[in-house]
Image (cartoon, rainbow, N blue to C red):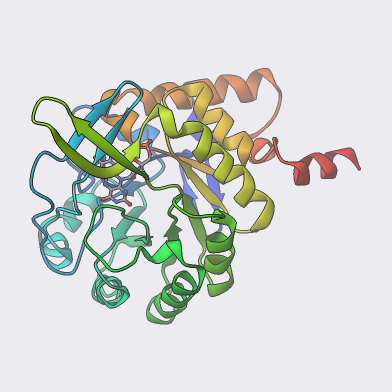
Length: 307
Ligand SMILES: Cc1cc2nc3c(=O)[nH]c(=O)nc-3n(C[C@H](O)[C@H](O)[C@H](O)COP(=O)(O)O)c2cc1C
């Protein structure tokens, strides 16, 4: 399979393929080499790291619905300092851009992570998890455009590395936070994180809250990317419920320059390979290239094509 035609630039971030793991479903990035062929991935994205090591929420943390999952992991991770000393060198050997997802209970925690990791070699980009619905915090940053603007602005002062803003879908209008992130200098948007959900366990008669992912969120995630594409000029990584090759292509048509696989990467580690193969066949059959099909659904693109 000749992957060359799948090479894509998201601003300064150059990816071998547009297929990415979604944060939190791919460990720290190196653990899944036995089950996933990394040559089909455009980059490595770590699970979200926080300043201090975090135990996460008490179990249970994952619940299954007919068409998706709900999780409440609560950002369990080893912390940025342990990541830098124990994981980063292994990731560098994979020869892929390394995107480190950073998060925390406050903007200060997130900025402290960036400041520390910025001094380490080998990291291409920071994905700011501004949208985790599963931690006890006063506010989810990307539910508010002003808070989103402020943290990105501060992050841009700390680092020259690429900044990706991962947005919450739990808002009235995702374009407001997308535009705020762009205006503050974000290089790329990632849409979307999980949707707030609730699960009732009939066996132990308990109710749980968490973030919903998987097929059931695909139409909403697709719409979020579609609307963002019309309002912002920076590239978008489309994430949410991508379960198949066709869903991946639809996300690109909606405006995603790259796509993130979460729940379905856990279920089917061969999905990146299948999507790459499908995209190559699609481009060949339609005598086109990847860049030309990004955003094909959009009115903006349709008008350009009309003229
Ligand atoms: C088990 C699990 C853990 C996750 N952990 C993180 C995380 O650490 N950081 C983050 O930004 N998103 C996290 N997410 C959200 C995913 O990256 C993704 O945005 C979301 O699941 C939607 O994509 P999907 O439907 O393909 O799973 C997690 C999702 C799942 C299912």
